[in-house]
Length: 186
Image (cartoon, rainbow, N blue to C red):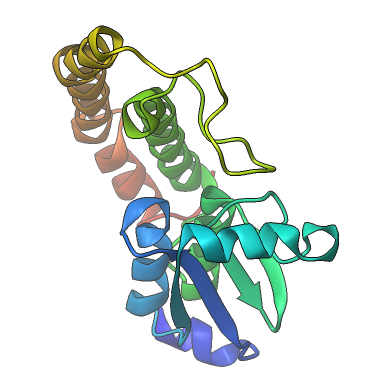
């Protein structure tokens, strides 16, 4: 892993996200495990508002974090950043194993989407231009409780069971690793 990184051109990396693990933690871990140095900048909502206000919103391409600046150029979207970091560090496979990894990641993304109402107390996530929750879309206490119940009783356990079943079957990760010697081919 680290040899792949050392053979590539060194870039100056600045990773910007809130002072939580959240969506960017897998990117942080991939960079750390792969031995790629980066500056880990924790931002506030006020910082993000200032980035949105930059000329053309250039500091925050989609008005949100995480943002990975590579040699001063901002890139965003957590899944794209994770794939980039994974390739850069040699942690992201190719062939059919890559497809399996992407399947799991997309399932986790689906799970994150259904969790958004609980995170924001709103049926929609924050407005990408203003960072505010849209007016008139807040969940009532009863709706928030029902969302919480459904997440705990249905969505999270079912999705995690599906992922576990996929990775533990002879048609899952074990087969991919055995047939492809850890990730090649396909």
